Image (cartoon, rainbow, N blue to C red):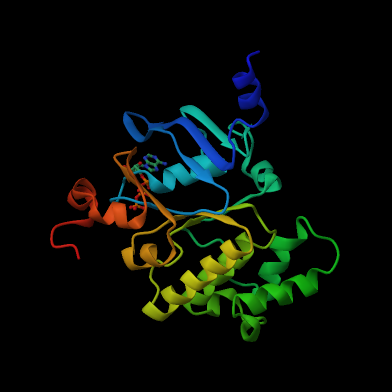
Length: 251
Ligand SMILES: Nc1ncnc2c1ncn2[C@@H]1O[C@H](COP(=O)(O)OP(=O)(O)OP(=O)(O)O)[C@@H](O)[C@H]1O
């Protein structure tokens, strides 16, 4: 083994929390995700943007083990996790809030959080729930049924649940969808708060103001392929991105 091979072997991904190699998903004849090579470094807030049907949600499901890829590999902290179940990826430190609501509507906010935490924590669950309620601004709603929460609060509960076990990497699929401006701003604050706690985030989002307020880096997906990558400024100035996604007259 050469010295460079040994170095690569010892730390193949450097500071990468997540890396994909040729990740591909086909649904019949449709290539929804097409040979995606992605790398997300520790501490990043990466936004994944692109037109409807670009493959963003499918990519996140592949990363989380909700879908099996047709081809390609997912590395988490340098380890090949492609064959691991979603449950095992959560045990390794990954977590995800999906687009479709995943709270138990009949149960209270506190009970929902209890369910998320009890999988891994045996002691001090109540203290941990109180801490979550506080940091997500849901303390007064602790005994409210999840179905009775305002839309924004329900989304925050989901993010609180997805981040309850202190993941290293949190994947969020459209966390600000359907939110008011105020709720969206609050969601951006929560994203920064989670990042300040050391969580690396990958966030799908259509609301470009929201993307501007959180993104440290941006990946543009188009027809299943990585179309562009860079800072939000680079992406907004990229004429090809404006053409396929941001549109004419975009300010
Ligand atoms: N389970 C499935 N079976 C067949 N086709 C699917 C399936 N899931 C997604 N697709 C197709 O794959 C493509 C990518 O879909 P995906 O939902 O990943 O896009 P997206 O970028 O998240 O879109 P949006 O922004 O509208 O949520 C679309 O053409 C979609 O119709």
